[in-house]
Amino acid sequence: MMLSRSKYITVSALLSAAGIILGYLESFIIIPIRVPGFRIGFANIVTVLSLYILGPVYSAAVLFIRITASALLFGSPVSYIYSLTGAIAAYSVMVLLSKHGFSVYGVSAAGAAVHNIGQTCAAYFLIGSVYVFYYLPALVIAGTAAGLVIGAVSDIIIRKLAVFIYNNESEGNT
Amino acid sequence: MKKRDLLLILIMLTVSLLGMIPALNSGSGRAYVYADGKLYGTYDLSEPQDIELVSRDGIINRIRIENGYAYMNYATCPGRQCMAGRISKNGETICCAPAKVLVVIRSEDDTEYDAVTE
Image (cartoon, rainbow over all chains, first blue to last red; front, side, top):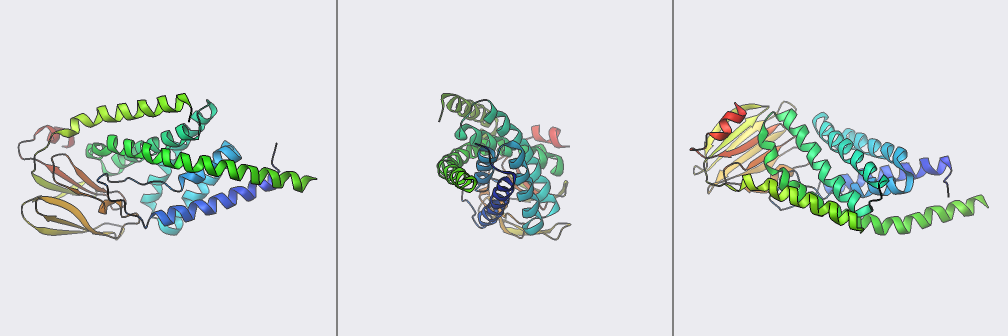
């Protein structure tokens, strides 16, 4: 079933707003594990959700809006570069995997891992030292675990949310 | 979860674990503090002290060294991820990406890394 254009835009806006808040809330949580740069990536729930509910084009917009708005509200130009590099790398892989029959779990875990790889590469170019790669393997493992959790959460939400959105749509049309 | 998801995750974990092997060598030494890509100073891990840095964007980082460990004691960067964890072993790093601050532990006898960075 297809959604109307206005519904796409509304859901995109809602998900973007939810993503900004999730990212903001996460900045209050300092995870006490010895892997610098590690985050659970709550906002990634929104990316996975939008990818599965809205498709790659609208979810790319959701991702870009979320990152740009978050950077303008809470970040700095440097943090924007990091977010954007990680997001572009992760998103490309997520779209690719979702098109090749991987489930939310694989897409989310690989997205998280590639996000970390992308950010580490950005750190290498900005800081100019190979030391930043020291934690990459640990970061990828932690990211994969976090990605699986995010995947599980997204899986639950997608089932509920998709039914809700598509049901309302059919009622609106009749 | 599908079979291919599981396979993908297993591959990622295996590659990561293999990548961790070179990082296992240990031995304490000095903390090398880099700010904005340049060496700011080196500090003995056995001497307790605070090093305060202010980045070009006005981000304050305070690195504390005590009991053979170095850690980020205070930071005004947005994420404050640099404040998670402390380091003591050769090759371990703390990185505050927004402030472009990097703390690396290097042991005195380790010359391999010098060739890489300099």
